[in-house]
Image (cartoon, rainbow, N blue to C red):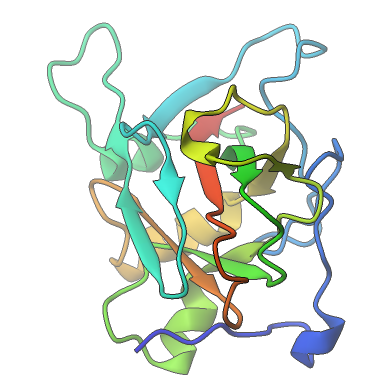
Length: 202
């Protein structure tokens, strides 16, 4: 059974991420501040390493899991996220991007995000795979969110240290899996969705 964990003290004090802000909390690497690696201000575009193939991820009152498909480079026939990480150049950073937050109404809960979290994890496993916390406080609240135009709201997490740690422990998957767990019961009919999830190298 999944449990939403709190790595910074009581859950009431957990930092809420401003979805519309360009600077967000990086829980997986607290010394490196999150940013949008694909922002136009950067002269070199980020390299997409893996991304969600479905149109959107619909959240619920239970943990939801979504596998990201690795993106093969021009000279590769198949792609392995683990192989890419093993050859990551010095100075490069990895970011988990969650874009296009929409909801029928405010869910009223925080969501914990994990990378490659095993099924039925222990509390120690949850800590080892924890990425950060997101919310829908600034998400676009309009009926029928899966059919809406995309919103501009996003969250980015620097997951460089987390990914390297999982790789060293042998628990990094060839295809990364993102798990999102609500810290409580979302409001009825809130129907929160995340339109895009990807991992990029910058």
